[in-house]
Length: 109
Image 1 (tube, rainbow, N blue to C red):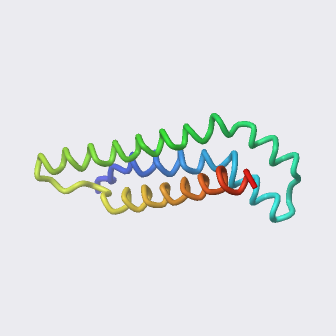
Image 2: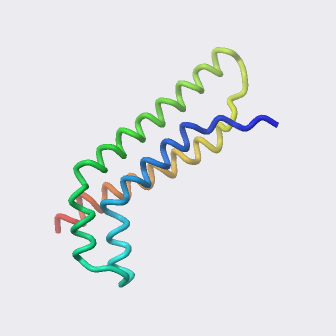
């Protein structure tokens, strides 16, 4: 059995979750009462690095997905892992939307 090529999905979900380290994760920890504001402030200082990396990584994941899809369309073959990759990309986009909302709208209040 050949394993499906899921590189685009893995890249997307990894970079989206990586970008949550600066914003969503600290807020979740503080809201659950497990951490302090100091923990949140410590991790949020890396926001200018992590957020753009998340957006760039998500863009790269979409590029990899559509490049593979186009190659399979040209060869008239079935793309391996198409539905799983698409699911991971949509989940990654959803995570990045949450990060964007928290980062730009909740932290400026």
